[in-house]
Length: 392
Image 1 (cartoon, helix red, strand yellow):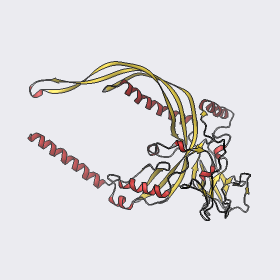
Image 2 (image 1 turned 120 degrees about the vertical axis):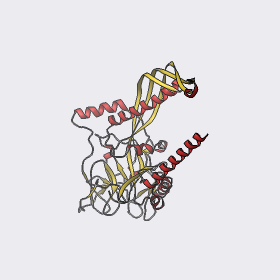
Image 3 (image 1 turned 180 degrees about the vertical axis):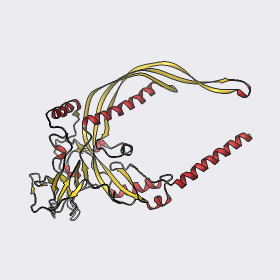
Image 4 (image 1 turned 45 degrees about the vertical axis):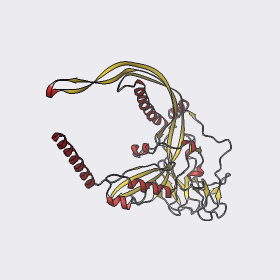
């Protein structure tokens, strides 16, 4: 892994062709390699999505352009069971929902050719730095199209400030690290997500435990014990789950990605490739069925906690818990993340920042000297407390 970038093995420089692309009817530039950029109407350079203005902006002449969204565009919930049946039918017909393979995409600005592999769908041209996208990957007939996208709301300067605050608050981090910080290049990436809605009907039977104390023994053996009385508990209830999130790309540390939640999903826009201009993006490699299985586990865990709260008491036992899921729907979203890869004493670390809220999650180095002193300090306090108790 490079010192200041996220892994870039998905982009390979192939070489510049001799011909340029043509402009499509919508004004976006396309070519036979199905690349897309957004040319500036003022100077012809490539427009980027500007986070502060929430519109396309030319980094050279300052020309700005509003996002082009259809008046009737909206983010709609999709029927889950119907889509799963469609995916299965495609699989049975030999048209499986495979990951996109290698594809050569030509840059309209410099005529360089970039090889996209795997699920990478948006990147920068390695020759001139222009934003370049795979065309129609997000809406291919054998791929489930994107329903909505959350634009970058936290710009890079704010992300760096959030990162600095996160580093300074890390306990047991090396002093050198807290002073120097994480040095490297931020990469803005749109990650694919599935969201699921479900109405659940739940029936449970178990026991509620209520603790009480008794005094037993005599003399030096006199002591207090905690015991529990158990009572029957049962019931049923409905609970609606809205937008259960499942990241649809593999290879990322699950605990850190989950730690980025919650997301401001109410600020999502109907999908447009314009907000991808200047940023990397990926399509899903976790299929819809796999995402639904993950979501069901999250729903199951949440219902288990809910049942324990309904049983109440000091302890709970659940003997039977049956759940039925109805009104199943889903959406396919792209959510923005700032990613940073850095090294500390030669060891690589990764940090992820929710570009909608500024939440920071990631890997960090530890100071074993500080940890050792902390352990010794705790041990010394424990010994002192034991000594004072014995004296008393």
